[in-house]
Length: 261
Image (cartoon, rainbow, N blue to C red):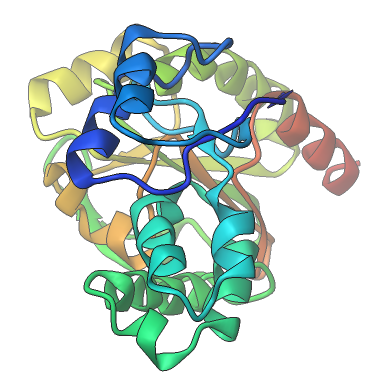
């Protein structure tokens, strides 16, 4: 879904925090945006990008501005503030065009580091292994389930994440539909409360393997896959090659139908 509206390009950190409470409003007409406009922020274009957990579900079209201004500090600051909401390929494109001044802006180094991580788990690469505990406290490697002859969906989620909970019924149905045909799911929870994690798995009827280190956003598995929003999925082929990322709902169903005859 795309929205045609004039959007903010440059703002202070305070303004950005204020705007986070505005995301998800279809018309982009809210008191906080009015306050931002009063503060001198100009609007050009807004659109919905990759989903994030919580109410912040829309973002600004800053990618175009940053891409067209790879030698300007304004482009760097915009990119730094909103890079996590932009498509990975667009981020790579912007960094490839950026000059040393752009890259020297504080925080850009972290974006570059994350893109390097994402490159290691890009489509076409082999999955990255890690070890975590299951709900009984037993340690397991991801490689016990991935690359073992089944198509596997690595699902990064959390019991406290509303979008994760919303999409779980559809995922449960896909598991029932394809599990006996060679499809498996490994859930990687970003919970920090074990009881909430266990209760969420039970209440949402998630019958597949679950792993977590209960480190919230410091999850080591999430870090290895460059996860900065959930739900986040990684679909892996029988031999451990990454096939696709962030497929959900009908897109995932269509992909599985192609792969599993």
